[in-house]
Amino acid sequence: MLRFVPLAALALAAPTQAYWEYGHETIALVAMANVKPSTARAVRSLLANQALLGTPECPARTPEEASYWADCIKPLKDAAGQQRYGYAFSWHYQNVDVCKPFDLQSACAKGDCVSAQVTRQAARLRDRRTSRKDKVEALAFLIHFVGDLHQPLHAGDKSDRGGNGLAAAYGVYAPPRFNIHSVWDGPLAERAITSGPSLIRRYPAAERARMGAGTVEDWSRDSWALSRDTAYAGALGGDSCSPSPAKVTLSDAAVAAAVPAARESVRRGGIRLARLLDEALF
Image 1: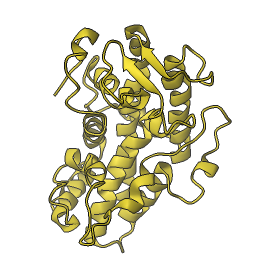
Image 2 (image 1 turned 30 degrees about the vertical axis):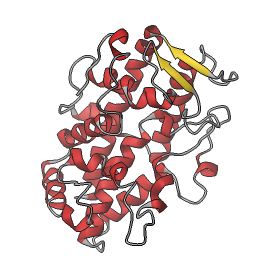
Image 3 (image 1 turned 30 degrees about the horizontal axis):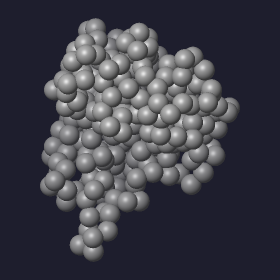
Image 4 (image 1 turned 60 degrees about the horizontal axis):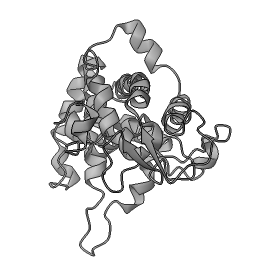
């Protein structure tokens, strides 16, 4: 697994894992380090039944595997050749315009967005009438979607598919089709997570209460603001709503400036997931 190396070295080899694995795994592990012991046992018990999902290509035997199950299943097809989980593609993000006042309701009018699904999957997991199979699915979806919500370019947008339409270079590292979203998914996520002490630890109760406070809408606003004020602003020279060029280059200084906020977002994601799991699996 790649850890942060100088930008010149990044030009020679792509990261072995993107946010969808390493970032999601870290958020899941932070959560498991901070849930109640009874919650941890309940999570392990549910995941022992992951074969009920019928996705052997995409196992969810551990919280780490479950954290990226929802991405792994995207290409799976049914017997008729149709996307098995096509209905869930829009559940991974929400296109909340960073150049207008925060408006989650318009972006999630039909509930087909990540914040709505965090709420929905937590409710499914909490409902004692939910079947065992559906509880396992709800758990895997919930772990993943809380991670997605805390990747800022899944929460804020500038009419460019969360930065997917803004070509980018990470210093000298600029593979084909790389973009701002890719930067935050891959090398920036890895640098943030591996900078400083491990994020995976038990946090004091007061710190857990502070980071875990608020509603899913509050958390959405946090990530949207990070998208506007750090992800887009850092790429566009400080003005997130200035016209986007054909391509941007993030200097090492710009990336270093984004690391603390990206690191804090991962930490908050893990603590907030822990809170939701404790509430659902009491």
